[in-house]
Length: 185
Image (cartoon, rainbow, N blue to C red; front, side, top):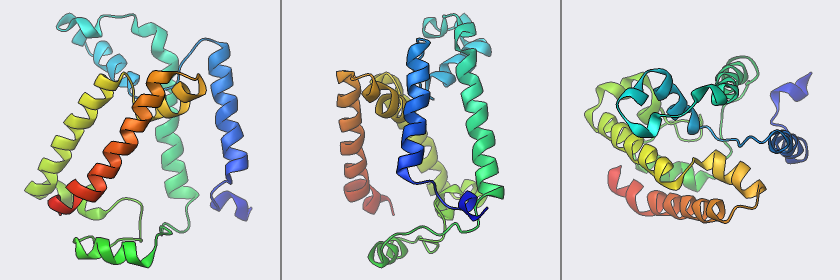
């Protein structure tokens, strides 16, 4: 039973992802999480104000189930299947992050400086979260999908625009972590 608490190796999880993508391909569906935001906005009535949201959201109900499953699965994994939340990163990275003010570096996947509820009372953290959310939302819309949609589904379907988007995601991540992150913290 100890195997439940360990991360699954790539040779188990990789083929499982490939199987899901194959099944989606067989039924004519594409995987991606960002399209659910459009569906949710349409359900809430945004289609009455903006033409972008005018589409048959009923065809996307299956994808909303994926979101619900992701939330439930993440909760179960985090609260019931995780015994050790430490992150295996180098000591040099931990000390670099501590120099930037992240005292819990290596102890958890999400830094409490940014993702703890107390971060909402810190003006700097709140501004960073709002601006980043807007940039991610704009980038997702501009790229025609999110990282999961392009990197998993788009690349599996051999779509050149997805390859370009994924290259852009990596370049953006490198620029962020090496140039912008040190300026912000």
